[in-house]
Structure formats: C-alpha cells, structure tokens
Length: 133
Image (cartoon, rainbow, N blue to C red; front, side, top):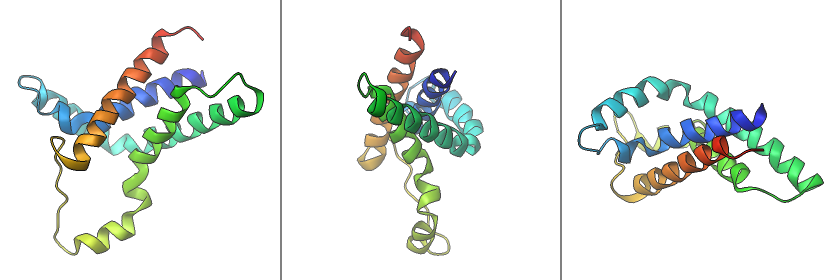
C-alpha cells in the first residue's frame, strides 16, 4: 500500500512541479492550469506523504537491502520541493517585502529546472504504478 502512495505522490507532485511548463502546451495548457490550481492547496499533503513514504523505503532498503531504488530518491526530492515554500516562508516574506511577487515561469531559469524534474517525477511515478513489486 505504501508503494502505491509513493507512486501516486510522485505522479501528483511531479504534475504540480511541472505545471509551469505544461501550461505552455497550446491546446491543453489552460485546462491543465485550472486543474493544477485546484490541486495546489493540497500540495503540502502530497509533499509530506512523499517524504514519509520515500524516507521509509530509503531506510528499509538501506538496512535490509537489496539496494536503494530511484523511486525513493525521487519521492524524497518531490517532497522537499513541494514543501520548500513552507520551509522557507520567513525568508521568502522578508525578500518579497509588502507587495512583491515571484516570477512564475516554467520556460526559463529555476522554473524550467523544476518543471523538467516534475516531468521526470511523473515518469517515475507511472513506472512505479506499472512495475510489479
């Protein structure tokens, strides 16, 4: 059951990370953006679940083997990236000041790196769902 939760966290978390790039798709971008806007308030829950499940499997596979799998590493990274705003909320508020806004672009800079990692996380989650355990 925890494997399924980790795979779903990789899929949903990857989607939330990749939405900056997916929203640029010509005919589907607006619909994907609206769907991501509905999912975004629950991103912190996905991040916590990804951290818990990924950490559990990392500890289990480090202690009893056979080896560490990429599903756990991607799950931990997805969890940290989804919770990054909450982890650095104070520093972000000080940097923005009273009325500043963050640039939200998935086509350049750090947004592009996050979007590409999100697509990789979606592929890993799909692979985990289709791979027998």
